[in-house]
Image (tube, rainbow, N blue to C red; front, top):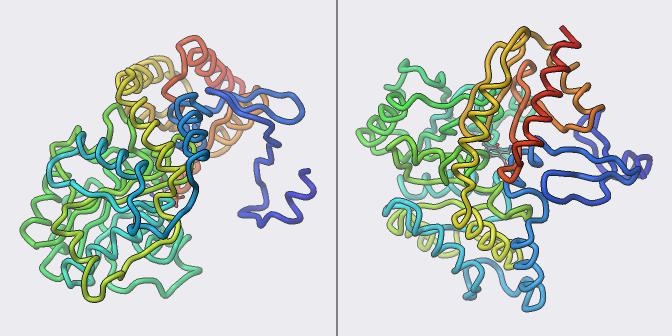
Length: 392
Ligand code: PMP
């Protein structure tokens, strides 16, 4: 199977992990050769309730028996979409009142950028160094890492990148600015939370300039950081909120949320100026509704905070620079690249899936599912510590 995979499935690197998946359940992924891996990255912040959460799987089955795709997005009333949107909005600030449903993170970013442009009538964009917003052209245009951008130039014009958590050059947010787009906790940049005071300053600059503030919570959303969305801990409300990844409990779905007033601009000049065939697919929307209900009914948000405490308490010692991040969106900063590589490889050999973040080669991504129990969590942390010791 690996041979056929390498031959027929387009590759994204010379070194795919190449696990042959048989099935997955809870915190575990099982391979066709009978091995069990603890998924300590949740499919990159997707399976927050573990793999195949029963409530999500039941909702999928139920929806499959009713209907699959029936019409392009936005035309027909589809209950799973409406149920999900109603529940989500009841947990968001008043001005975040409608969602536009898409299929993925990058589509949420694309939609948010287009919406901001259409609403403000401006074109200048502000992003941040080391950010990541997706790999389609618009998203890549606001992604702050030249090594990924350069092969695809020219991208969108008039995009400016500021330093994250720095008060410098905030005057670039001006009356020509469409929007500032940012992750309240940078994910691929190396799990870097924004400072509260600084985020408030950005909000203030946007208000003064009439620019929209877009939060990309595609990675940090749906409980991963200990609140439903990371921004809710910051006392700063964005004009547009992007989400995906953990939203569908393992099914592909994304969305961007804004006010009714801002969304008006998608309806006119011309009508249908931003459409999608599959956005908010009913099966994915049903999964998203079940996933959100489970997340809100259980004590998962508190669990994320407990995980943070345990990980930060345990992962200390030689070779470790720091553990940073919030809730179960954590990064283990090690002393050098070689150690990082060896630790990830040794843990893999011992059945633990860890990973890198895209823009850092000394940071181990720790993003366990929120259903992980203490015994397994401690086991994984012990293995990581031993791997560090063995490779110093
Ligand atoms: N924004 C952020 C913050 C992300 O972490 C990601 C995915 N890593 C994306 C956007 C893109 O999401 P997708 O891969 O679903 O297009």
